[in-house]
Every structure is written in C-alpha cells, then in structure tokens.
Image 1 (cartoon, one colour):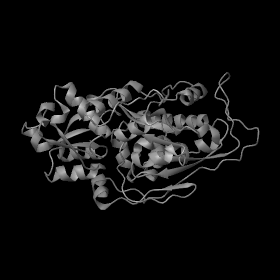
Image 2: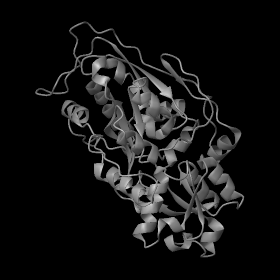
Image 3: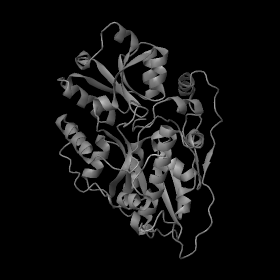
Image 4: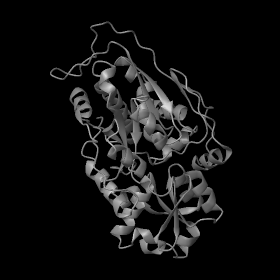
Length: 394
C-alpha cells in the first residue's frame, strides 16, 4: 500500500492494545469485491501484546551466534510508536503481536493515526518516539527545519519480486483504455489525476517523475486529491478518468473491469522509497540501547512478513495479525493481492528521497531541501549485525 493512509474515522487506544474502527460501508463493500466473493473475516478486535517474563537487572537478549553483539532487555522501557492501520506498517504490528518487542524489554504502545502527516508533530516533540513518513512536502519541510526526527530504516520501497511489484500505481478508466483514449503519458496532458492527499504527496512525485521521464511536463497535468475508495467509486461511476490506486482496490478494479493499470510504482520509479521509519532523536535517552532494541524487533518482524508472503512461512499467523490490525477483515484478500515490499535489512534508498525533494523543488512546491542531517544508520547496522544479513528460508 502507498504511504498515505486508507483508513478513516476515529480509533480508540489502550495502553497495551491497538483497536481499529469498523470500516465505512463503502470501503467494506469494495474490499468484499477484492476478496472475490470470499466470506468476511471476524469483526475488528484488539491487538494484544504477547506476555513475557520480566527480565532481571542483568538480563540480555539471546545472541543468534557467537561473535554477534548482545542487547540489554532491562530495564523495561515504554515506547510509543505512531502507526497507520495499513499493511505497509505490518512489521510494527507483527513485532507487537508476536512479542518481539517484549522479548527485548520494550513495552510498546502502538498509537494509530489517520495519516502519516498527522503523527509528525508528536514525533518531533518526543510524544511519540517512533513513526514513519513518506517522500511528501510535509515530511521534507519537517526535516529541512532540523526538527528532532531522523530516518532510520525502510518501511516500504519499490517491489523486488513478482508478488511485491505493482501493489500501487496509476490507473485509467477501462472504457477509456479500451477506446485508446488513455494509453501513455502524453495522453494525460490537460487531464486531472486524482491521488490521495493531492499536490505535494508521494503519489504526486511518482506520477511527476513518470511524466517527466516520458517527455511530458508534469505541470501540464492537474493533480487533485481523492482517497483510494473514492477513486474506485468515482471511476466505477465514470466520474473521473485517471487516479492513483492501491491494493486491494487495484486488483479488485482490474478484475471488475473498472480500471486498467497504466503504470505501477516500479514502472514510475524503480528505486522509489515509498515509506521510511523515523525515530525521535531523543530515543537513546529513554534507556540502554532502546533504539537498537526496537530496530532488532522491527527487522525480525519485517523478515517474518516477507517470508510469509514470499515463501508461505507461517503465512496464516501473519495474515491473522494484519486482519486484526487493519480495516481489511477478510484473510482471502491478503492471500491474493500484491504486498508492499520492505527491505529485510532495512536499507533506505537515500538517493531516491533526495531526488524526490529536488523534483518537488523544480515544481515550485518546496524550497531547497537539505537532507544531509536527516539520516541515522547506526540502529539498522546494529540490528543487521545482531540478526545477520537476511537469507531467504531454505
């Protein structure tokens, strides 16, 4: 799924439980289409942390093999992490639900937000210690002002496998495609493309790059805001011509003859850095190696997620976590759609983010952006040293 949130409405949060609201009727109906007639899943429930024994004062986490670093698991430290209830945040939900955080002495509260941009102020002020962001104008402005946030790991990037590619992309209405009216970038000149959160968003920069690479001035195409479910409904009713869509609605629309994929994320930008994990710069003050502890649990969960969808390892358990944590309540949807890719070693494509900031500058949406101080790789490097480089399951 793309960076901007699909979920809408309020959510209730407990100290140890993340609760997701029941979907609106329109979104629920569209997701039922995506499941191709499969029966609906259980109603929304709480995502409860697995219990863990209280560590002693000298406890350290188990070491995968000799020569690798150790981690303290005490004292237990409370951490608040901002999330959006979408599949792209799967590593957060998996680490929480399967007890990976708890094993490392972290009492993590997942705090739901309606969108990525919504969590930024709380993260910059230390009210949240972990969150995520995307290559959009709001996030670039935050980092450009040297606020107390830093990019530490990948959360979603361009797909690397057949199953993970084209989980999000630009779609044209099926009748216009069939008539040959919209088939290529130049056909969008003078038309409006509807993307979630509109101008200055991550979808906007991907579409602009695709247009520019194909000889079309991005300013000749109007960008307007419309959430994913509304893009689907408006296209179904022939109210719009072109939009940006994500799974499961992307596959649902193709199957139902509503739209055709013009370009997937990887077609528009093969090196796209769609989402990234951010830390509050004061995270190290919370306790011994809190940033490293969180990152080890996070990457362990990212690998479990990848192994489930790419190789079928413990897939039903991982799907169960996602059904519990997102508005998609039918497990069949997760079994069939393209999943959002996350790098199993957490590597961030820095050049992609810098290029996105520069393109926004060229479009007049932001001034010069200096990201030189925005990256901190030590937590990711530690986690990879602790867990070892990722290897596919045998």
